[in-house]
Structures are given as structure tokens and as C-alpha cells.
Length: 80
Image 1 (cartoon, rainbow, N blue to C red):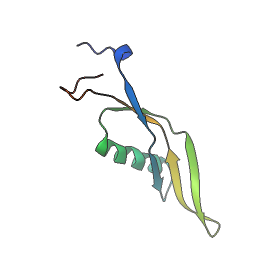
Image 2 (tube, rainbow, N blue to C red):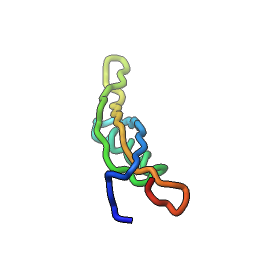
Image 3 (cartoon, one colour):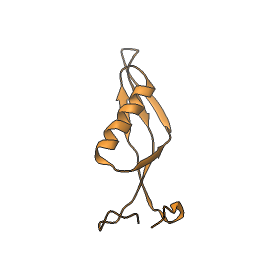
Image 4 (cartoon, rainbow, N blue to C red):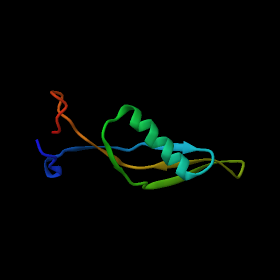
């Protein structure tokens, strides 16, 4: 079957990652964790950034993003 993206079905998830240094590391942590349990992650766009504060100081950075993966049928691992 040719790789015809117009016939693909995608599932969307919304991971969130945290990091103590910066938003980039928070986003990277979220992608790496999602990649452990999801196949064929294709795209991600950070849509929300926020901070965890403690005693008036930044304690952690958090990045949230919707990500898509190609949905596959259970038989033969083919794309739906």
C-alpha cells in the first residue's frame, strides 16, 4: 500500500512535561516519555507553558502539547 497521507487516521494525545531548568527541557521530557509508549509520533506543537512557583521563585517549568500518532489497525500493523 502506498504511503497516502490522505487515507491516514491520527490519534491525538496531550502530554505535559516538567523540568527544573527550562521549558525546552520540559518539552523534551514529555516527548521522550510519550515515545516510550506511543508509536509513530509525527508532530507536536507546544501550546501551553507555565511555571510552578514556591516562595516566589521558579521551582519547575511545564510544557504541554498536543501530539499526533498514526493510528494502526490491530491486524498486520497497517495504517487505518
